[in-house]
Amino acid sequence: MDLEPEIIALFSQGLDSILAIKIIQQQGLKIRALKFITPFFGSEIKDREAEYCREIKESYDIDLEIIDLTNDYLKMLAAPEYGYGKNFNPCLDCKIMMLTRARIRAEELNVKAIITGEVVGQRPFSQRRDTMRRIEKLSQTEGLLLRPLSAKLLTPTRAEETGLIDRDKLFDLSGRGRKPQMALAEKFGIKNYPTPAGGCLLTDPGFGKRVKTLYENEQIPTAVDLELLKFGRFYPLENRNEFIIVGRHRLDNQALLSIATGNYYILQLAEMAGPVAVLKGPETELSAAAKKLCQHSKAKTLHEAKIKWRKGSKNGTFTAINQDTSPQSEPKTENHDN
Image (cartoon, rainbow, N blue to C red):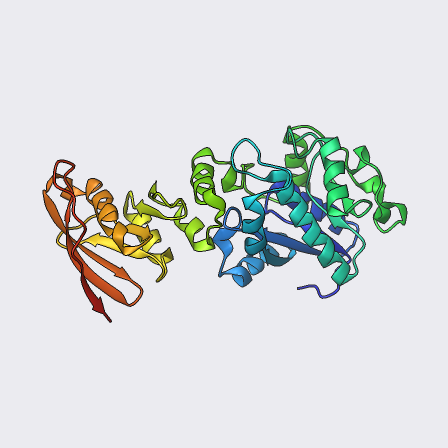
């Protein structure tokens, strides 16, 4: 990694952020790119950060640093100062948080500019001129934040005014069209880049609704809770921070088994193949979790089914009554401490 960068860049791996970096690299400046991750974007590189940084260096010749915002982000999501978007997405607060962290990193590294791949008018809210100026003010990046793809449409930054960056070599792109970016990609020899997408899972209505449920009653979920929410069928319990998730297929089941830690109950059918169920909640909810498990398996036609469970070093079995017409009873569990 370059130890003495002259510029900080925000990197999403999208084409626009790659192009913004390449435009400035063409001016002979050294860049440190920052990639922010949370459970809602970038989480796929968690625990393989070094490998990912090597891949980006090899693919795009970009020096990269990963910053995990999870703890601060989950607190912010409970009550974002500037509200939510159409779903449970706090886009304005999110952008301010990332730029604020980038500014702090810039101060630590004594660099004179922060660049992003933003294009004026590309997104209907966050990339309007007035919103872009507001974000600069709130993140205290006025005069510091440079958008190379649209710079000629915006007020010159200090890096341009001092001659560190040549404004004549920047661009004046605007709107939602992609042809200019694709032409620039060809010019720079960039061939492998992702197609435009929403990126953040919180913009997905279904997933956003799940996350919102866990935030009810002024509770903040854990990062593991949020990873589990990405898989299976979701059933919130009366305490909205507690839930049951049942896998829909083999890949779901594998994911649930790999993610659920010792803080969760894992349930499976003891005498036949079937899905995995994860319970976050007290032992008294095991019968409810077993019922959901049976409903989504071959055991749904049986009057009762034997269930095996484990939580951390403890495990056991019980017989679940799963028919809606059957008398309800709490499971009689056989506990075994390993």
